[in-house]
Length: 255
Ligand SMILES: [Zn+2]
Image 1 (cartoon, helix red, strand yellow):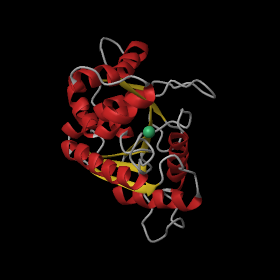
Image 2: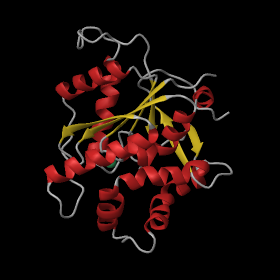
Image 3: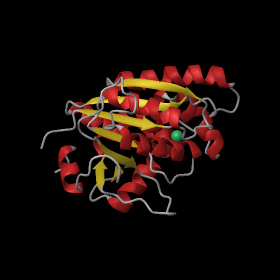
């Protein structure tokens, strides 16, 4: 089965794509998929000492550096970090952006998550996806002929509905490369996240990052994987094109 041609990963923050779908992006880029990364906010909240404009500029540079490694297109919108809300205007901007990229696969957050921006992003994407084929919404940009498949990135929240691992992607072979992508987001992985989680960087920074980041894909592998040490997992959204899990896995080269 042929790979997805154009994959758009839409996150709330400039590092969400790499954190939750770095392995998917790396593996699919290798198979020839065009990768796009869109951050709906400017990432300007996540720091202990930098002000918003300075941090926003830094995070844009970091996002570009990671995208360059991937050979991906990247766009960081100017919505203030921490204040993302679902609005008709933003939803239509998203309809335009998705139509312009013409993805056959969209990857985004689930609507149940710890971060209000993640939940707002998920809602915006879900509602935009419903409108991609409606010509009277943003009539200047041609409506899509086919709905993209929408995959939601893994989280461990259980209310109102727990995550369902429809597709599990082993990432053992890409683990080091994902660390390289994450290391581009240095304001987050080496400054803000150690501060906010109370897990300070110790020893050699990349070894520390392997442990810090690795705990999550390790848990995914333990809960949903078979025979791998690290994994990413995705749930097929009820919005977008409906595809069964076996076919989706095949299109990602997993079977
Ligand atoms: Zn985020």
